[in-house]
Length: 163
Ligand code: GDP
Ligand code: MG
Image (cartoon, rainbow, N blue to C red):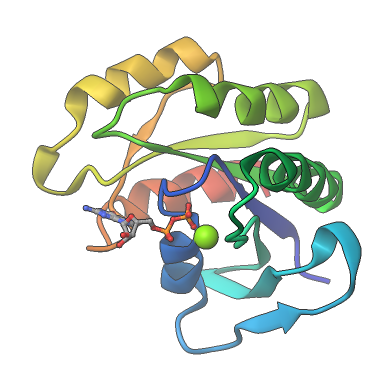
């Protein structure tokens, strides 16, 4: 069986863009089981010769922010439980926001190996946010751009180490 990688982080950091980048056209299944796994997507991800099952969390869009965040947390916890490694994504341009921290806390408490991705860093943007990311206590951030496909080599190396 393939190892499982969960993509975790607050809304709008680029998790789904990263998911699509990793899965390519291969498989983008919608899991329509009810409850916390609703709207979760999973597929087979690749970087070069490294293959894994990848879970995208929290593709939820609802008006009620409180219930949305509660469901996102539950869904995130469920994905982390299944994961052999977590890709924790922040928006390097925005820096670390208060809303990143509860998700970081879930990852840290789980003890699951984590790779910190400082996304939206194409063309060297977001360096300040990447430095900021050290404060999360989740290790060294990888400057990354899910949209432009930058940082894939570093992510491949990091995945090789933990999977
Ligand atoms: P999610 O809510 O974490 O799944 O985030 P999405 O993948 O839906 O992306 C949120 C927004 O960030 C979208 O407008 C994306 O186009 C944008 N985005 C995602 N990745 C990048 C990136 O690497 N660079 C830039 N500049 N924008 C990105
Ligand atoms: Mg998403």
